Length: 308
Ligand code: SF4
Ligand code: SF4
Image 1 (cartoon, helix red, strand yellow):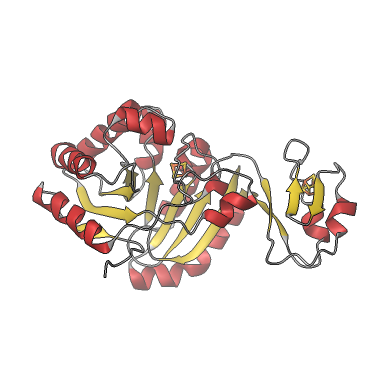
Image 2 (tube, protein in one colour):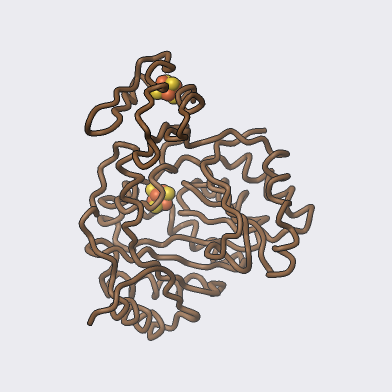
């Protein structure tokens, strides 16, 4: 059994309790305009070029069997229609300026990687988190990995958009110890505009999750002009209070633009290129608003700016 993974992040502290290893599954059915991990959207492996590493040795150009590369004064042009992500150019580059994002892992190999840090999990109350992209796109592998972790008494969290058929959602989240559920907006038109999908399936799964009794952390990215209105945060908060009595924590995640270089390296447009980080004061107000709606344990987690 194999999966395409774009990162295995050890010593993660933001994706559930304690010290964790977060496994990022490649491929997502959503297209969030603010996505912080654009390299996780396509299900296929992709080539990235790092201008800061490149020494213009040009070995990659000669090595490419598809003639997909062109190095110009403005940088590397990657013809993504031609590129098969074979990785030959990355192997030949003496400066490690090219990399294939998305590696095939077998279940056993990935589990061996995860258990390297088991002592950290035990001492910190941590474990592993399956994230993405959207982990539910590779649900058979995800289920098998969760079962293997549970057989070995590891704490497992699943970080999901909730956008999957109810059967798949239940199969993957059922055996997990914790679900990190993204609720980005309660406005279906905004959801369609900014993420590319309707809310129906997400809210249906969220309501069922609320009846399951399983611990849940809800997370909302607070994106200026998209999800940051008090009306939206109030609507998410009221949904949590009405439907998710098992919600243990509500994370408000300030928009971050640290992903700009990833968009450039993937030749992808970034709609929020000029958007600034939210102000701490605004985040504090949204936190108070959520609390006033009855949501418990509201946490602002991420970088903000402070108004003078
Ligand atoms: S990954 Fe393969 S096909 Fe793509 S640019 Fe590199 S050598 Fe060419
Ligand atoms: S759901 Fe997450 S991974 Fe998928 S596009 Fe949105 S922000 Fe990116």
